[in-house]
Amino acid sequence: MGLIIEAERLSRSFGGHLAVDGLTLAIAPGEIAGLLGPNGAGKTTTIRMLATLLPPSGGAARVCGFDVVRAAGEVRRRIGYVMQQVSPMGYYMLTGREKAEIEASLYHVPRRQVKDRVAEILDLVGLSEHADRLVQDYSGGMQKRLDLACGLLHRPELLILDEPTLGLDVQSRHHLWDHIRALCDQGTTVLLATNYMDEADRLCDRLTIIDHGREVVRGTPAGLKEALGAPSLDEVFLRHTGHALREDLR
Ligand SMILES: Nc1ncnc2c1ncn2[C@@H]1O[C@H](COP(=O)(O)OP(=O)(O)O)[C@@H](O)[C@H]1O
Ligand SMILES: [Mg+2]
Image 1 (cartoon, rainbow, N blue to C red):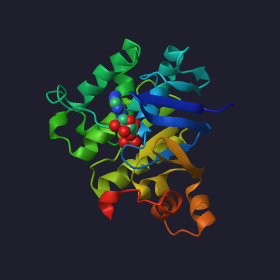
Image 2 (tube, protein in one colour; image 1 turned 90 degrees about the vertical axis):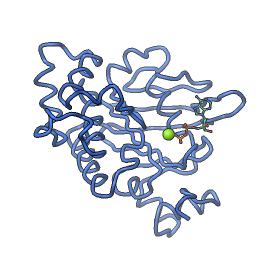
Image 3 (spheres, protein in one colour; image 1 turned 45 degrees about the horizontal axis):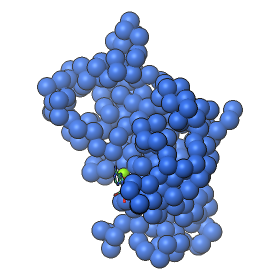
Image 4 (cartoon, rainbow, N blue to C red; image 1 turned 60 degrees about the vertical axis):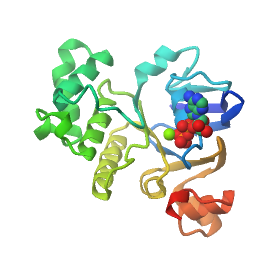
């Protein structure tokens, strides 16, 4: 099988500012691929171009074999996209099951299959017992698992997760990682943007580290550390760029 994501010199500017500057990506089926970089590095902009929500200013990308500009509909049918911040407003008065059913219709899941599909994905993320509780009573971790589940309703080949564990406590993060890993084991390719070094290290098979819209370096987490004799990906980032991955932690 070919690559799931192929991006060549992908760029996007806003006004005169190059948010993504000539990024090349090659992501194979069955991987958990990571985009690791600090806030403002261009992760979300890259993801929005791959998800057909933002036209590139330059370069090209194919997702699941289709060009993101010329065949956007084909791409959309094959991907699930879980946004960085999903506003729970408007969903507050719904149960988890009701929210998933609404999302299923947005994703064009055939009406006759909705009930079964929703039950299946709620089970997959361990929310079956809580399906009939209001989303507003879910913990942050449960809301994120529900978002993850909703991205899977139409059985996408590629699931794109933008900072899936942002703001969660350590236990909920680890729980979510287990679910993401399980999805990958079942054959879904995952592209994940994060600025958490430990998330990239523990979860991703392969990483592209970016800064100011450009690739800094790419490789496996272990390979990247070995090449520099660095103890952590933080250190890998620091040595390549001269500044810290998360300024707020230093
Ligand atoms: N819609 C937009 N209009 C103007 N500037 C934007 C827009 N979206 C992102 N940017 C800018 O592009 C850069 C990359 O942002 P983003 O892709 O959101 O980074 P990340 O997701 O890595 O934090 C930032 O400098 C940001 O301010
Ligand atoms: Mg972002």
